Image (cartoon, rainbow, N blue to C red; front, side, top):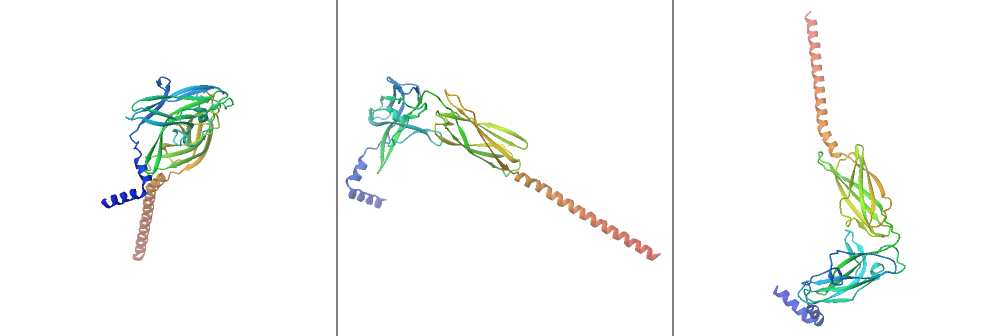
Length: 334
């Protein structure tokens, strides 16, 4: 370790100013902050900012940035378009990506300096273009701070989601495609298996919608329907977006041919939903463990039955031979 430290010291001395500058930058890992919706007077009780505006409208909202650390911090403020991650979490485009939708309608200060333990309220001006299309244009506002780890810089962002809707003709519509249903058997013949169902939901409408999903499985002996119990936020799909969902249905016995129907309805606030979309796929779930159990029970019985038949036949042949020999001896003595 002493040799390693010596080598590092020599490298720092050789590299000179760049290395020294990177190391001299103050560590910011102890800085924590939060960003919440607010009024001009301070934070309010909202979790997100919900707005329904007509084309050409202009409003001023506010967000509050609270610095939970002990020293003053200068935060970078930006607005951008919002999107959903594969897991359904709200996120924003990177700060170096130019917004093209709702984020481009928002104006915020470039920076805000907040004293240690204090809260600063910043204005968020939203100006909707007169020709904006009706529907949802998700966006958000963040306060970010760059941190340095050696020669690598990382931007940490905390923000507020803005559900920005332009009034007009609203189209709440979802489609479903790429349905796959795979049965996973249990090798315990007395235990049912599971059915893994995967499907893709797309939103060709103009408002965000939750995918209310029903999965129906049917086989020779009946049918059963399952409804997705997760919250609407988890099942949300933004306009123009696509998400893949999956679920596992337990207690599904392998009973041969099985059909799986996925029915998706759009659930959206303030919009009339279109007719549900539905796709059916067919597969096979063969009861192999159960067949093996039957064979394990039947084959020994058949073997025992065959052995008994052969033994009985052999005894009958011996008895017949003995009778024939007895009759022959009786005839010779006569």
